[in-house]
Image (cartoon, rainbow over all chains, first blue to last red; front, side):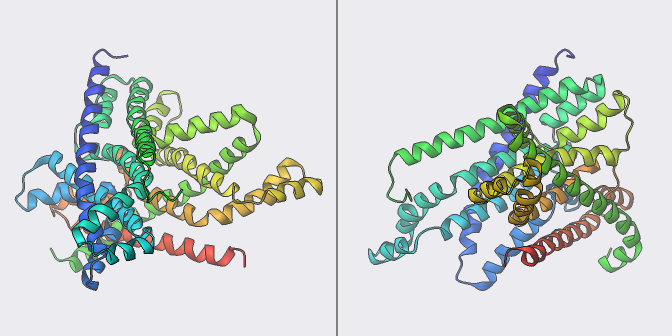
Length: 218
Length: 216
């Protein structure tokens, strides 16, 4: 193995994980907002939500990334690839998660809504005590899936020269031609991150189920 | 520059690139379906170790980004004496990755088949291979059509990554046009619209197929 490459790949992996973490946090906040739009009283707002999801899910992440990367300087925003990449990743994760949350809200049984309303819960309390806990439990498995996808999707940003694990690997390969070793190591790093997130999600799922919640369908 | 003129000037360039995207997507989708079926067959028939091997394969590809196999095949094949064209290398990487997902989709559908059918197949003396080909596979494929449609859409979008190994498909073409003309966003907006069109078309195609062949 070329000397020093393991440290470089580890640094790249840290950047990938950081990118994914920022995108997941930002995407989750964005998705909650978007999911609220999906249930708006106004048809125009609901239509806007559908267009957003349709466009973001119907175009490759790379096209969105390149579009933002090239268009931002033209709009006098000289932000560089990191800001552009993070923004695009948030927009992308947000669209996927918004659909997940929307599905979760639709899965809430009707009696829950009716009893909440008959108790006279104000909207905020209804969200905090009924909607949020139920949707969290319903959507945890697909949420974790999207998190894994986000880690993998962050590799696409290497093409707009965001230095993370995939770009680190590519740079080392172009210098040393140690294709198998380097890509094998990079794959191992990705595998540990993605598999780790998956297992962590399952642990958390069990933890939520153990707390015994009236909303559990079991 | 306004879009009408843009499309008038660069329309033919886009069409060629669209052709590459379509060809790689269709080719890779067919290849992935075949390899996915083969993985399913291995899982069902090759005993415990076969199933474990397929499991390891699926986990590996599910937890790593597609760009890695793309780079691996593109950079490594010339080194081991296989100087294949970039399109073939990229297509192969997409096949390997998507087959992992497809074999999982198909496995889910196998569970939807009534156990009685396996007994029935045995009782009329069908050999295991005939059972797979004539009883299991047709039903599994039909049950899986919606999920396969989703996977095909993902594959179609992933063909954009082949621009990283210098294949002039839609995304690469947009990048080239942007760099040649200095126009900041026109090229990519047109390409994004083309992708939306392709994705919607694929979705409609799978929906129509599903409606046509599902059990009445």
